Length: 262
Length: 256
Image 1 (cartoon, rainbow over the protein chains, first blue to last red):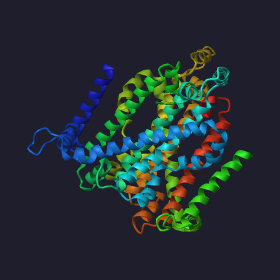
Image 2: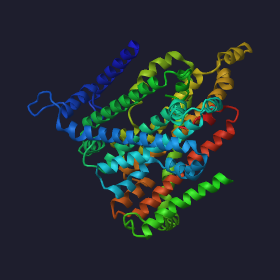
Image 3: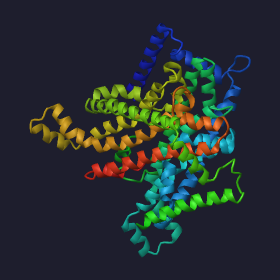
């Protein structure tokens, strides 16, 4: 762990040295990027340390839209998936349609939602919900179906009441699959947040990123990219922590996680 | 046969109720054209030369990017997987770069490389490399040491062990990653086409139809084409995976 921090600092140091020497506008040194980030987000009108309006008009709306939409997609997706997973006939009816919706490369949906909802917040939220819900639905269906024969028979033999059966047996068994779906959908949600703001928006992280590029402010471009990387890292780590906690009771978790390449 | 029939009924109900909602005046056809008109537009587009060229440009960029990603990631993964020292050094670099959402780099790469097709190919390669690289490394981690020891005691050198034990063992893992990479590469290519206006591409066609006259019929037809491409890729790779790797349950089991 310490070794990795040392390596990280060494890498940043090398970048600093090379970029400082080369004096290239496209690759500013890390200190300059950090300084630009401070100017963009943490400088008051009098030069003191203060949260800038940009944090409130760009970062907060972006993150709120992302989280609200992703949580809505998770709630809807798990609900719909649980219902469909219990009924083979229902899944037969909607399966092909859902498989198609899931296969649409999600940014291809942006123009459709742009025309349906305009460039406001409702466009982004519905777009992210529609784009991110399918991996959750289909993985929940898979997970709910993966309940073994032994638990099913046991629960039957004991005449386990329906709610206890669903929340005590079905959902815990489905959880690993549900979390796999949540992880793919989070990645899609972040992509849709950034892209929808780049293509049709008047505020947000993606909008500012493109705006900085248009105005040839390359250091700002880097600052916004770093912000997105930090945001992506935080969200992924948070989800991994929740997953670890929820699935702690399961044996062999470490092995499964590695196999999925995360 | 019955599940297929039910699927068709599901599709028919979906398109039928959409058509009915527009015909009965519940939705303005300018706002949301009925499926009949969308499919008519789709037919016209498929006979339209420039449109077909745009689709070809997108699919070709996708193919090139995916090929490059495999050529870069799999050997790199084999190298890092077999040399623990190299791995711990590169790991920090990888962890530093990987959380960046690939679409966040689009403006930067446009500044550096320009508006041409090489921009979208570069970004798609970047996005597609990670799943392939990680799954190759993990596949090597999971080899039964008994197999490696066995091969060595029969006199296989390091290269031979990689070729006859490690590579076949890694293939199903690599294939699972290949499916993820194929999906993310297409996503990144269409995204880049929105912002890099130069050249041709399906993304450019769809966005222009939306921004100019707000032609929802064209937008829907174009999105349908993108969906069909995505579906063919996804479904095709799933079938191939099931056929090739019937002997191994890793590739068949991966759904996400």
